[in-house]
Length: 331
Image 1 (tube, rainbow, N blue to C red):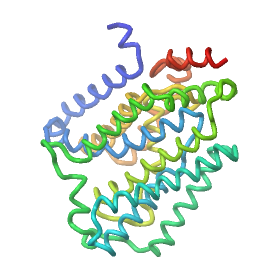
Image 2: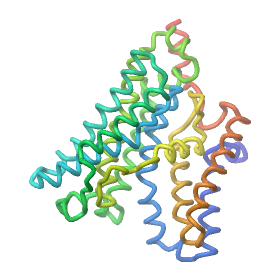
Image 3: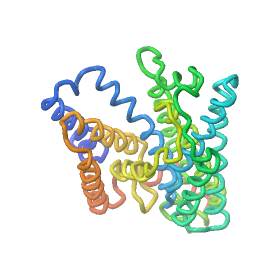
Image 4: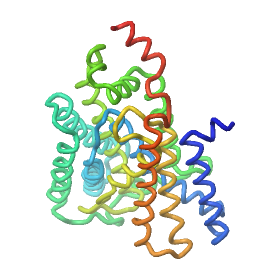
């Protein structure tokens, strides 16, 4: 039990519980079922994007274009739904996901096959994708009255008392857990992040892995683009502006090392949930929203200091045992 409490994820989970209880003591309404349900729903998009960003960071990369990808994909889905209301909703979702996938694959190709620095590539595509949102929409908003009812209803429709957003996030968490813990693809990402030269030596196709890592992250951003627009019933050029930094903050708080090769699904989920709790708690206790950025920054700096102190011992085993065995055999 003592060794478990020394791990990053249980400590963060206890901090989240303590924060919720402290806010509940100040404002009991925060502990009601409706409030906690809203908190869980509000955290879903951040958690899904944090998981997508996590697999990129594992490879020593970064995707600064994620929010711009989300905005462009969301605008595509909004324009399709508003101009062609007879289109089936699954087709509109698929269009958003496909746009996100293509944008992500472009990042992956430039980074994986042309070996360009991830921060430079995604900084550039961030501006390009954001500009494309303006060009596509001509600067106009798509408002709630322009959407078909089923487009807006899907994310918040309840199944067994829980919104579709929560069910979708649960499925994404399970998929990410399987990918990172039980697939060769996921083990290769940890190997690339830890020792790229060794990963290449044992035959891991680094360029291909990076291509599909950024592709998967882009697909998730694209799908979240539809969910974001439907959740808030509006699409505009500044959609999710700057949200990529919140996503990266969730990863850092969750113990995912920016140096690559270290991090866990549980850490990304808890990091996203922690920021969602802060975002929902401050208005309840009547704290100025200007303090939210400052508080988030302090939390990030603390997390970075903890990461630096513990090195690469947080989250999970850096390289799964199975990968180590396979690598020795290949060598």
